[in-house]
Length: 229
Image (cartoon, rainbow, N blue to C red; front, side):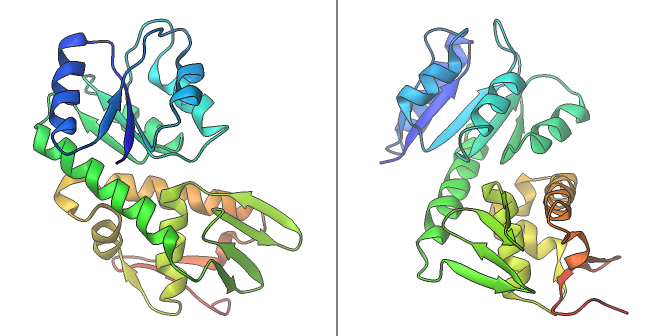
């Protein structure tokens, strides 16, 4: 049974979401003090976090930063604000998905199920380490090591990188990545994938690997064994 932490100050919505998710045998916990969200997160140790952007004391972005500094737990944002920048900010902070209010509860359940399957299933594969152009990708620890330096990746970033290097020298379409990440591309925007890929590239640049993933305009992305001429 998965444990979910729902950080939502609207009591009516909180109870509705908890009731719906509980029907799928999820343990749903809430926050009692909105000025100590991170402390309650640490105490709860959830498998997934659902967090509203507009909260008392500090907004959801603040708490997402704090959580990401200590954990790669999947995070789903909820927002009633109609600002594209909110979604971009969420992805840049390492969120796994973004849901605009009002939403259909079936969509929320489907997204939660897809994320939990992805995060807690693919890490159980026997192969934990992958060598790629001199770098070592650790599927278990969510890290990439190159020339003695290591970077940490979020679950989404690692999954994207894994899909590309497992199909190295082949173009992986954006549609294929979206389907693999979220199971059903109707539930996610194309821009979200762009944000995740750009964030992955930026982290790889810290290791000097920024050009290891190439964009094929109108086709998708490719991880090659050799630098293209």
